[in-house]
Image (cartoon, rainbow, N blue to C red; front, side, top):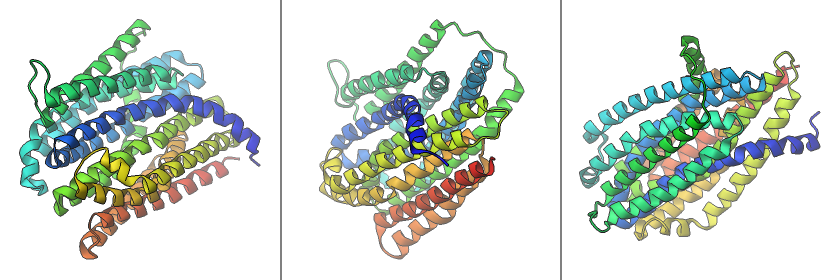
Length: 442
């Protein structure tokens, strides 16, 4: 029987690890939020173009996060077992994997922009989007390499280093975006394209700073071994697939918004930016749960005692649900205020406020499913959770959203209502999966 006092005791180290991870993920999102707020002042068409661009980039980014999360889990396992050389080896293999994925993601985004007319977006949106899209696509390489380095620091109990670099990077991006969007001194006003220039520069500087910091620790170069890549991919591909199914569902919803109107697409961008920002909190907590449960598995490698794993997980679940409840209340009662910070367009503000009410409903589901998936990742259980997310998002959420939007006339609200259904189903099934697996360990 799990004691509440034990849960509270284990919650403290979880939060100590999760806090810098949350701040790091939030800092990454703040770049997108500040960009959206600045671009919204340029115009609704530009904001709609940014919506599509950020949707595609966000899809590539979140898949990359999933692919690289096993780096931290495997490092945490070796760290718990006292294998320092193994930790360094996982870092080097993760860096190579990050570069390879970054190049692949760049190629995919290049194919998308070359066939942009196939997405049936408004002509005026396509006309202003291409330079901004290309600049954002290029930044995926430094972003992924940065994530591999952060995974190592997080698992080695140095999470504040990456978080501090990201926070400074947000301020740098804000400064550069203001300069390149509206112009300053000899730099001409570049509008939407200027935002892309600023973001590429800021993200490149961040990875260079973190690389320099790691070089100062004089890590011993480990040889690249095929079986380590296989191990990373064995866990990384299902993890990436799960996040792909969720992020892909939101990207598909963004495309459906484009079919409705530029106003719907702009409102979707603002509401999704807000929801994605709050999602970083349970995502950071999920990453911490995966590391702590993975580390506990390493320490208890020769036992079959599940209670410590449940204590760690249930404490994380409780604090995560509390956080998302607070965010849900914020979305419900301050939707107009939040939307007004991004755009002066009244029509976009009104629609965004309605979408945020739906977002308030699925906040709890979204937080629950990502934390449950993190806990299952720590148990190295990936295949069944990946199947659950595929069914929830692609066989249920998107078809329901399409029917509500286009067959029942609910428009943008219908699309988001379908997403809420999928997130709710995923949360329930993933939490039940974790309870079943830990109950089976006697």
